[in-house]
Length: 630
Image (tube, rainbow, N blue to C red; front, side):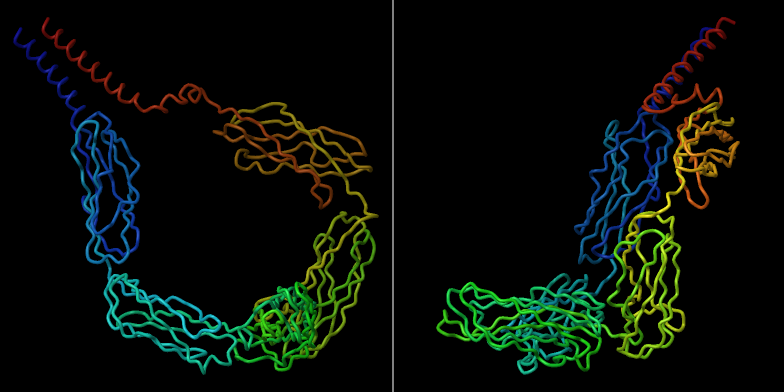
């Protein structure tokens, strides 16, 4: 009998030892065990994997990922944030490997994790990337400064493969030569090249560009641009004479930088003498230069000679009427101005200074616009508003059956006005009236005046600008006051999930006359099955109030603060939208006693497991003693 008792006790002890052993062993497994893929140089890649614990140890591991490694300069830029793992746990994790530029061949890396609280054993996930071959070139852009005919550019091998016989070519407004060509470039390497422009090609150019193309076997050609920006001066001496484009005022359809035919562009040129002596015989010249055609548009303009004393200045205001410029076409233009004179401070030397700004001129095949729109700045309710404007056809085609629509939804205005036929570069007159409603709200309104063609389409130019004009109109005075109302609400009964909720609302007519109100509940669908109001329509005299009740069937399982809106309307006008907030209690007994029992610090889990282990041992010992007594 004693032998049997000893055997049972030994079994109990062994069970305790086995359970204790579970607290010291640990096995962590990566899935997949190996990651292998292809990658591009100069990129980042996310490695996804599972990390699992086999359940053989009850301790929580303190995980350290910092010893993860990679070769060829690759780095683990992002490591998993997981620092602990429980028995039988399985986590989906990711890490980011950054592969540097110009790397080729194979990048080997290891994602390494150590369970530092119990052992220094490292668990490794091997990662292998085969780097794709990439052949790529880049060409920098540069500009040739005024007074020079050369500049430098940089050709770079952007790939991870060495390149041989890199060849340069050019095409554009002027020819160029290179100081080197047909050179080799190792991966990631660069070559500086001097680009020299043909002097004859640039002698008459004020602006221009040439495209430089670099190519090599198996490589998509790369391009850069060399631009030329000569100053609008025949001599390079500036001395103390200064000229600048001081202000541009476009009085037509366009703006400061975007011009249309028929625009009148007013320009201020500022001429300054910054020296201590007079500058004599100053002449100011200006004009438009077509950068596409590489030629002047129309004629050059010139101002009569004048003198400037020391530290003096003069503003010249000129107007360029684009309607009078012959052979004007759409394109990119540059406005140039220059001033020349004789500087007395610099031993009567000839001086020149210039300035320029880029402009766009747009001529569409079909485009009709409004100009000189005139309407009253401020009008009263119930009055008529006179609207007039010039309707210009600034396209290169005649237009038939043009009409205008004047629209504003708030004012209920939607008026069509027939204009008729308009020849190219000609105009017709818009002259009409609109009526402001007597009950309009006093504020500033934006009208929409749209110009339509004979196909009932709004005119649109080649730059996708629509012929829509939006003048402002201020409405003030003689306006009929709309009905007004206020609402206040209190909880009358209910407030639990799955039960009706009753809200009492007090409606007050704060207007000056009797009004009919429509009462409604809204914005409750996420927590209420249905809602009703006992008095959906109210008629209240001025200053009167009345209570109405809203019954809301609260959904089951709802809790916390919820809201809905009480809406009061008069006709088509929404007068009040009052949010109402209520707190809903969650129904049920168990919900009140189980909340937050499991949560917060997860260390309770370890203590529960330990307590169960001790209880199991005690039970085994008690059973063994009872068997021994029998």
